[in-house]
Length: 274
Length: 332
Image (cartoon, rainbow over all chains, first blue to last red; front, side, top):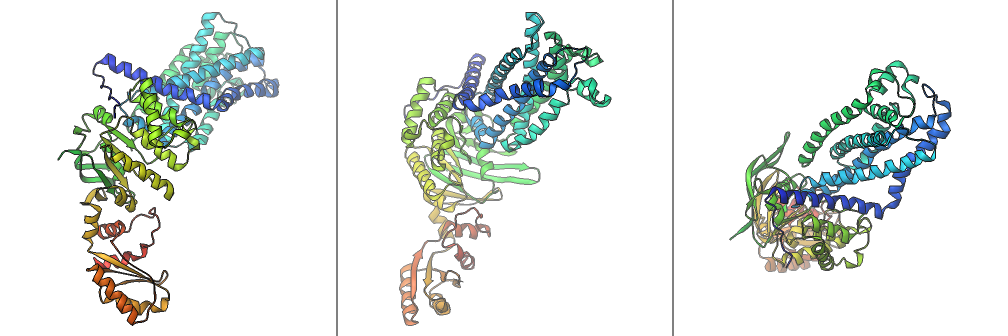
């Protein structure tokens, strides 16, 4: 046969080139999935829109925003964060399926950059979530939500949301590697929903029993939501200590999650053979 | 002789279980070697160590002349791994799968495309190249899986139970593909719990049990280990069993094994043709009608039973001569 064997990269620069090329190949694989399964992508993108309609119009009438203000203005930052949270399920399902099918093992047996499996996944999932966020912003604008902050604040709010998604990415990868099968998706959904609802995303924590409200305020999701509400100039930011420090906390929480779950994922990936 | 695979005293422990307990293996270049053993014998652990997916606790292994523990990236350049599951992307089509794996072998876009087209043709998948793999049949998946393991024409191809879960037709298709690969000079290490598979494909076989190699040889040598051929006799009338058994006992080297349910009698013999003539004459004298009479070599099933004292795993396909196991044990 005439297929030439490409040389093994020896220099750091060559290795980096391989890592980038391989990461892009893995990303492309996911982007090709979208083309093959546009329905799946549409459902994933439109599900949060459905939730906006449900909460904004069906349930929202009964919810008072502290300090006054429009409920849908209050809701949208919460929904943006929820969209990031749902990303855990996307990541989990993809990682768990690959691990169960042996695709991850095949990748590990190839002469490719080991990091590419993860960087490829991260790029694809972050792209997916950025698109999801764009759809939600469009949806928000359609139901009367506005960012009242300046361009810098608005961009910072979007960056904070994506940072939260990056933190959830590692949780998704870790759980996906741990589960070794996509069947446990239901279990992850059971985990995701209480985390989503036990926060200030849908209702002000002031309406909850005191201890539950405190718990909800210390939910990492809530810090991002509060920070984003403040940056967008949306109502209902609250006045507890953690709410007052929402902006640094919206950086600190994801940083902490990444500090925990990134090494855990790497360790789990290396020990996949167990 | 150059060895494509060498393993010396490999050990691997998971908690309380010793998956490999001093595993040895040598596979000469350009041969097909079967690693035969039941579920949990350590076959997959051995393959995972040899393909750099797993690190051994101790021992040493070389693949294509390279130490798997210290030269992993180079080893990965020279091997192909076809695991127990068809490790493919179900949503992508066949061509896209092969192109992706080609790119991950750093072939470059154009070469990856050309190689994918070659392989699709070689494995008779060109017609299905645009179908999502999720719609492939079991046999097609395995063929695509094999193709994906052959992208760089590996020096050593590891096939870990390549036909587990396939129906007989798909299994035959995969066997045909593997035979075709062997002609290209690739060394193949095949793990299987199907004894027939090792018999069909492998030039040499290592029998592995509880993480250790317990026998090596050609399939014929292994069969020879349990001593000679066997005569299988199927009767028309079960009432003839005692008379037929007596006739067979005159030539057999051990007590014949009777299975009333299938009306079968089986016994080991030495001189195959003389024995057969003798049995036919004795049956005539006793006026016993045989429905079927055959001399056969022992199966690898029986070899395995002889070596390990336990029957093959329940996943083995049902075999007509399964019931002769007890007789074999007595013969041993």
